[in-house]
Length: 172
Length: 188
Image 1 (spheres, rainbow over the protein chains, first blue to last red):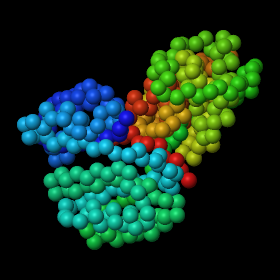
Image 2 (image 1 turned 135 degrees about the horizontal axis):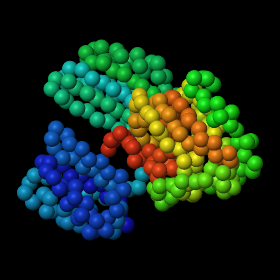
Image 3 (image 1 turned 90 degrees about the vertical axis):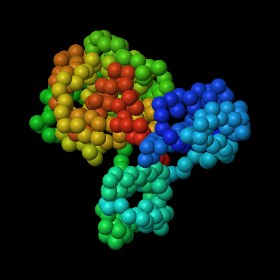
């Protein structure tokens, strides 16, 4: 049994997911976690699969997708990751403002400085508006007030609005 | 208690009104079929319904942070659930502990989105939009008295989550979008 990371990126059209997953099912691969979205109109999919096939065999089987040059497929064997340990508190970080180079790197740099771990991140450019939304785990030792101040300062320098909001999930 | 939202019969009700001792049952987890099946309507005066009501409250009481539990979560496909949001920080008006049979939401308004978790789906949370003001009709176990509950805020959310369980629905069935499901975090 191997664990593989598979990516499919390129020109979007109906049926890419159906075709990809049919090939993977035929190889006996089990789809574990996956995500797919459109990035600036391009199809982008990442999958973690487990099964008997190796990555060379997987790439060969998916060759039909890449034949016309519209899609790029990669498959790589990867090790099991240990289960995520306990975290401090979860936050949603939102940044929006006029597009300019360096917004993401400056903002997430402040998060990294306090040991924050980004577990999900989306950015979108819509006209002149740039938007970043990220899920951030902060360690219990992080000084949230100081982080908020540094994010506000960086936001002011970049001319963008930055908010950091705690997310609680309610057990029902 | 905020009196404006308290139905008298429901607000006064406690599990001590039931003539039987509750037993602590095992909580089942998805993908158990019972969690995806519509529960059967029950006779609220039947001895097995009264016992189930007591068991649900007893099981809720021993589960840390638990504010509600529906019959399918203890493996019984029936329209019975208990709720007690008294201790939750997001609670505004509430009715204390109560059990409802055959409950339905008859009015709902003011949708709000929040992230929910569930004892039966221990590894995931999800963003779910639910009404923050609702009116529920149901019956009390034992007497079978027909009651109307007007609930708001967190109690309203809890009631909708439990009524969904009785209909074979999990919060997963109501998530706000493809990226609105999150791995559950273990907090320090």
